[in-house]
Length: 196
Length: 404
Image 1: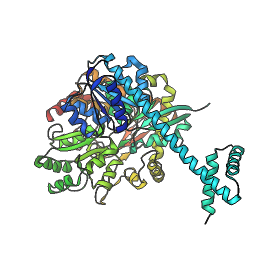
Image 2: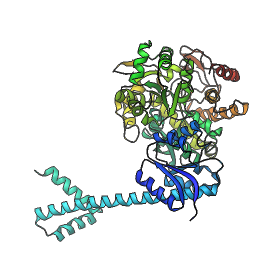
Image 3: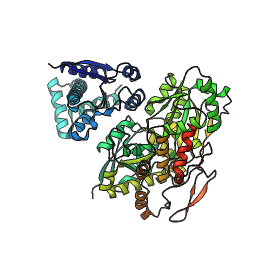
Image 4: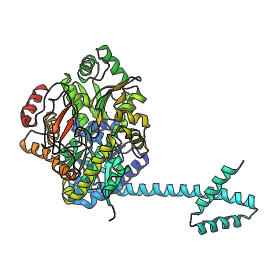
């Protein structure tokens, strides 16, 4: 595996995502990778140890601050936002869609940095996918709880078996062209309003 | 015909109000636009996503189209501004500790820029450490007006104090935690600094330079050239939003709309302060600032080329740009009064005849002749009494070189 002497700084308030990117870069042979989570440390860090490439998430409100640090310390001389190179429009799009931005020192050969940004983009996307899946799993779990609750109420008040209560919820949902969880939620809400 | 979809970026600042009202009050829809608003987290994102075409148009700091067209930004892209989102709206807030020092130094406690500046100069001179001030972006109206005020008050912005960049929503907290000693920002972030961090508003943009522009609707020049009808529709929608916003009867509703979670996410009574010009400047001291934010009157939406040139002069002044006729021409070309006139002429709007004007000569409201009748213009003084005549641009730049 080729070793890279480029120094890379990751600025991301999300520690998990930062470490995922950091791991990726290390696996790709980059040894000088650091990440920081608090933009207030950026000024000190880049003054003490000027990086060649800075990777930052686009949602970070501190991009303006970061760019100002560059112009003040001149640590990163004439920083260029990475997705700036218009010659590679597809790369720009990919980076922005993934929500990542990077700054590189001027004069750095494009192909050396491209691999880094490619890595950052794919890790950003992987992280976003993970977050989405987690969110989905969480909401499915929530749905399941509501449906169980509604089922229990039907079993008790209409003296149904579990299978029948489930079937009743299901057919009602199908007849009304709504999701089962919505029917269940209405039932739970109605019971809360009417109930003792 | 189905409405034309158009995407606009904005930051949570009060003067995004004209974009918001254009959507919420149907002015954009009236013009056949389906205006989609995207709240952004940084001016850098507004800049880059506008340059990349993710946003067709965006609320921008007035100097941003200039910086992009002049190649000061990473994505050098020709940008234009065919309409201004109003005048004023910024203020300068300091920490409770700095304010204590200013009171000792004789600050009178109103918002007048000159005595406040003198008092601050004394605090700066006697402070054991460099005071640190926050602004929202490097090429911002805030940066230039803060520097103008400091320099005219005898404080050298790059030597006597430190100026740092922070996004608007983070400024109040940075003030409270002692990370910064003061800041210049648009509303509601001054009022929030007062309400939550014991901050003190010491002066306002309109008291540094009366009736001065702050935000514009910016867009790529190439996109504007390809879509003249959409640009005209945007201008009319924003103009009518300004008209509606300027009606006193509409203030409550305007404040309520802006306070919503998708926009400022701030209580309506705080939002209303800048709309009414009644600010709580600290400790419940309610103070009326005439012309604090002017959404419409005083030809507030007209993109004066002279105003673009003033921002250009400040970029030169603070070393971001060299003074050349080419740079001045590029800067002036960013503001497009021709597009403004073309879009609004059919509405019978009173349109300024000239593309530029001299600022700093009117202490009172005055009338200005237009294409149809005259318009009442607000006072336009700089607090230090200097005049800005765009015809004397080089002399103005030279005089500031000697001052700073």
